[in-house]
Length: 188
Image (tube, rainbow, N blue to C red):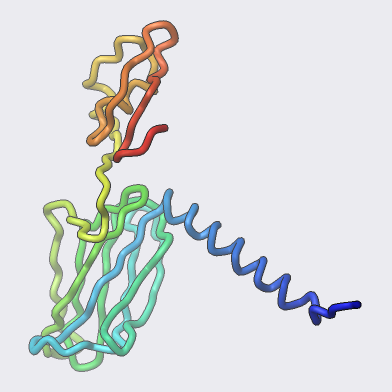
């Protein structure tokens, strides 16, 4: 008895889609994203607003428009400092500056648009870091100041993992590489 499964094209398409989803997950882990909601003063969604994120150091730009619910998402953005510009007909242009993306972070930038003409612009500079209500893990980024001011007893940079939030383990005195490291509840 011979069973026909049809054309091999649908199977190949399914495999390509599955592979691309796993690649996106890997890319999102080393990049960041900006997302949020655009509303007017009454809380109603502003659909079709143009949202542009610009990496201020590299000049990289990405533009999307808000959906009917006023939602937007700019995924897989290179790390760095960003300026977000939001434009919608009948509203003042809003600019948010100082949005810093680190590896795996999601910056939530919600904006309430004010009525106005095209010539008016509102600029907001971000002073504090973002809270990420969707994340349940802890993390931090080692900057140059952090590395220069911490003692490095074994002269092995792998021991810096032990000073990260929510990381426990023991240093290895023989080779200097941490062993039995536990991060965010997972053994590594």
